[in-house]
Image 1 (tube, rainbow, N blue to C red):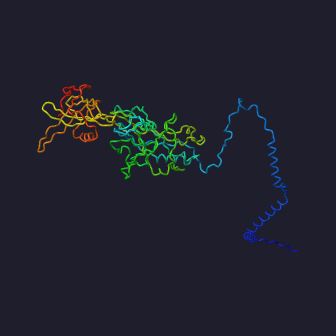
Image 2 (image 1 turned 90 degrees about the vertical axis):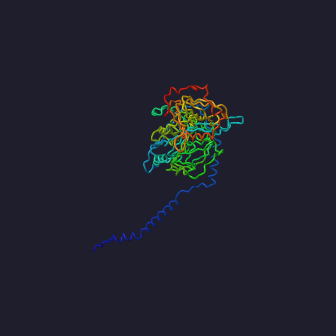
Image 3 (image 1 turned 90 degrees about the horizontal axis):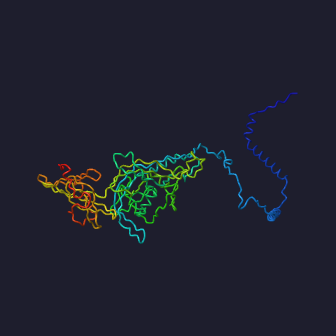
Length: 524
């Protein structure tokens, strides 16, 4: 008998499954569904009905209400202390982070802080309008003030970029914390007694932002809102409002051109003070010299992740630092340096997320001190101006004008006095506001001028004076050089009521002493 040989065509089998695979899979699902339904129909049924369940619930409530309460532990109660061991949190912490990030994240560091740039200052004096502080307060009105105004630029954008680089790929990012927020400043002042030696200055006077602003509000009633600089450059914690100057207007010294120009140079009208703007009442505390948060801070645009600036500040590269030091003394010279305070972005962050555990100990951070400013000289209260010299064969005589700043009334008084060689220039005079002490403690060493020039046009030579100042410096004054200052002061000063030919007061030190014979030969 011949055996039947089974012929299996592998290609045909493969082709069969490729053409009918979806039918085979569907048939498998159908068989499984039938088996599940059959198994469910043959299982045990739950015999209780919905009414039976409601009765069981009522029975449980009755049992709970009728059960006696647990007996009280006599060791727990008033007067009895229970000694419990401290809770060991470490034993319950997870050793591994759930849902770890896809990329390696660094622990939160402390950002690099940038100081102000281009610190500059300008000294001045003027009359300000001081408001009365009560119905019976008579101290309001026009008063004098001396000041040095300091300005600098704050690198806001550079600081924001540093924050973004620090916290963009760090653990526990927080857009509300990881934003640049300035809290205030510390200004250190040193008196310069020797302009040639500024390497070893005594930085013993420190002016904190809260104290400076409170002093200006108390003394001069300074209000925010009247500005000569665009609002986008202002920061209420870094930019002090302008003093209410009466007799003159502020100029570039209260801005910082070219980085921060005046509004007048941008075609925008300056804003007037707004009495509705409340004063900042934050007080410095023991651990935070910049004070706490304001009671009702205005709502500001919020920063977003990767952008530690508010939306309205994205286009601003710098903020304006501006402060007024109204505690300076006339005739002195000063240098300044500034340190800024910022809110600590790691304040309140769990130490597990910090590169160093002590980064969250303080609520604020301090920048390094800026480079010192140039030497700033406060004008003395008295100024000498050359007027005329009357030449003679014997001894020339001349006339000078002494301008005196009266700080109590905020006015400039001036009078014209005679002068000869060797005279100590201390005088007494009068003005509309009373007696004025024109004390300069300077000495007239020499004077010349007044002679007629030769030629077709006969002109008098301008008067020149050589003075020895009270600090030992020599000062040369020329009639033509002093003309502009003379016209400036006489146009806005208290005009004299006394005789302009008044001689030096003999009661003042050095008045009337003839030192001309001891001073050498006159100027040639």
